[in-house]
Length: 411
Ligand SMILES: O=P(O)(O)OC[C@H](O)CO
Image (cartoon, rainbow, N blue to C red; front, top):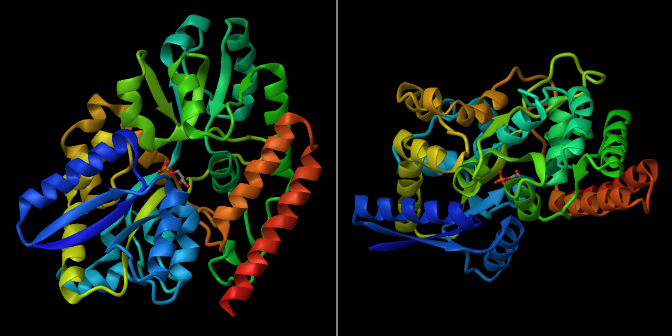
């Protein structure tokens, strides 16, 4: 058997499901042996992959998250585009098989898919139906204006209204997509690495001024930047709503001892009348270069297995990540999954809401570091050590310096 090394960033319940998929694959054939290895979070996995590539110790497959897409797609010679790999070793590849949102995010400027979408997500608003019933509200807010009107009721009943994980992803990138706002020059970075950030705009600053006001009023819970700490506040019923990934849906069904629902990302009617879809989140799998034909054939064989409708439907049901192929989505519908579990469809419905000029995604180098800049400045806003204008001036300056450095490294 030929070993195929697969480095991933799926911890907890997600990691268990990856192991189950590996077992199913290994039992389905006896030519290849898939070896999944958890390398820590998304940032750790990406760092480990870069170091391994430099040392010529790279795995066959590596999972890279949305924020790292520009880095790996621009890293010449680091990967084999999956479109080429599958054409050579797996009998062909048709990007039209994939849902529209994922086709563009991990493709090069000519539309060729470089990464294989795997765990595709979108931010959702989760709501505790028991707390909503207790305070006499029957539906989650569709807009931030509605949120502001209902927030005092939760406070009166002793709850925070909202906590939220991953501010850059939800309250910066997807804020722009949902409101159809441009987030960077050069077509959100798709047309060139010579690009500047456009986060320093009135809508974004208005929103962050509101978040700070909600915090001060006791409507918004801020449990630091840790994903889990904010999700835990929801599970522990401190907060009536939590914004996180559709990929948390499966985990919540086991950890929450209350009825919860999933809903669309709220939007400001003061910014847009008809909200747009969100960017695809999560990560893709990249086939690393420098491997033998035999191993590449194994990588292609596993990716074919993984993207089969059956495996995608299994992954979707177990985790909440959206089905990435049209066939898997159709299979879920035909199976009646969304009739028994309608909230499980909210993620893919949000992703397939009408697109517009600025909803396709972004391609920005050193974006992982730009997110770090945002985390720091958002903390400054929430702690009161910076006002919103000062924080966004700093984000603009530091992000543009990083983007310039990335562009210089390309030329
Ligand atoms: O938690 P995930 O996997 O849905 O990913 C969320 C973001 O896209 C990560 O950058």
